[in-house]
Length: 151
Image 1 (cartoon, rainbow, N blue to C red):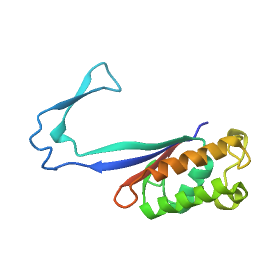
Image 2: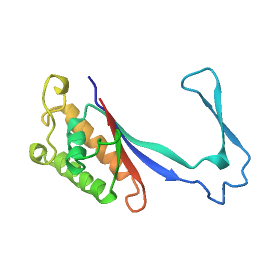
Image 3: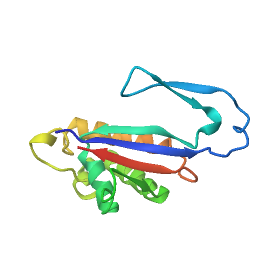
């Protein structure tokens, strides 16, 4: 069983005057047939951009579920406050600087499915370093971000 995790940015563009007169379109392959889906650019309401992606990084997942206890009550995603993402960035930086703080600040789950997700493991630190890179690249003043995960 794998834990797939994503951090997405939602950008709302619907009704923006810059797009109202654009007659161009985008052709997308359909996920369930051989046909293409054609979308007029002026009809796009929002887009989601993948900003970060992890697999079996239970320390990060555990942080999100602790900060947002009802995160998966109605769906497999939740919008995340930018100040919380800033907090996560600071925690990741601390753990990356001093691995001994990992158990206290960013503990992971243990068990047979998560053997590479312990603070003393190289993969754990690689995931923390990646999280820092992702979080540093976000616009935490105005961006709209959501966390999504599935088992």
